Structures are given as structure tokens and as C-alpha cells.
Amino acid sequence: MKRLFVAAMLLILSAGSWASEQLISETMTGYWQEYSHGNFTKAATYMDPRDLNELRDGLVPLFLAATDHPNEEVRKIVNGFFNGVPDELRKEMSAEQVFAGLSQVGKHQLPEVFETLATTRIEVTEVRMDTTDSATVHYTVITPEGNGQDNERASLYDGRWYLRIKEPPQETITKLRSLLGQ
Image (cartoon, rainbow, N blue to C red; front, top):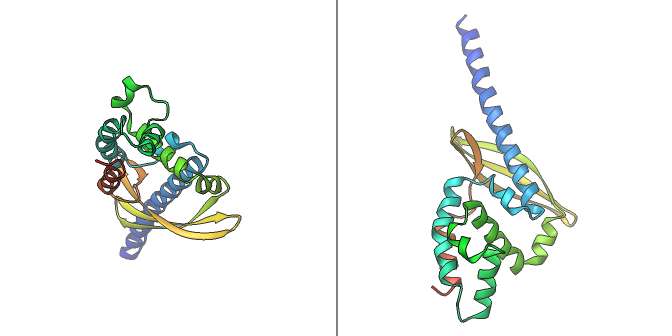
């Protein structure tokens, strides 16, 4: 009877882990599908809101301050970031709009990378549960030229699995502060 109880508990625990792994895999696949096709605002819905909010709070003031920068290249980056957001609404940008703006800047700076992204797909190869609320997603990027491996972090927040931004938001903010000459 004791063995049956232990076996039942192991089955229940592994089923919960499998369900989380499946949700994380679906999150990664959904994100890639949207991002690789340039749907940056939709892709942002797969990102951890804590990371996005930190980026928004740090980046919107930086980009607003650089709006009238004397360097034309900096102004191009700023215009790419705001990407059609009216002047009067820029201060109130959503976290998703900020993520999309950053992605637009990247797309403008590296158009060939984003052209290639549109031809890719991914296959999640492993989801490793680091803790009950964090995981690492390993995946293969499949391109016409060949395959490559990468991984992303995921976290459980407010009952939902999200992907984390590759580098800590403060590092991104610091790099962009330097790029924008501030």
C-alpha cells in the first residue's frame, strides 16, 4: 500500500511538471512565431511583464530626452523606437509598445537578420525546470542555411509562464543610454 501511495504521488508530481513544460514550450513557440514575422507587439505578450515594465520605465525617458539630439543617426534611432506613436502619447507608451519599439530599432539596424528570421522556425528540445517558478527552454532554430541551438529563461508570474528578456533590463537601459549619448 505504501508503494502504491508513493507511485501515485510521483505520477501526480510528474504530471504537473509535464503540464508546465508543455505550457512553457507553447509560450516559446508562440513568441517565436510572432517575433520572427515582425509582430513585435504580439510577441511582447509572451514576455515577463516585470521585465517589460522595467524597460518601459527606464527607456521612455531616455528616448524622450534624445528626441532633439543633434546627431541625425541618434534621431533616426529615436524615430524608429517611437515608430509612429504621436508626440503627445509617447510618455504614456505601454510596456508592449516599448518592446515593439526596441525591436523596430533592431530591425532597422539589422534588416538582413530580420529577413532571415522570417524564414526560420524553432523546435523546443528541452524544458528544464530550475525551480517551481523558473525554467530554461532549450531550442533549435531551423533555417534554410542550417540549424543552431539557443536557450531562454522562463518564469511563472501571476499564474502564467512568460519568457524573460535575454539580458537584465538594466543592462539594456545602460547600453541604450550610452548609444543615445546620455
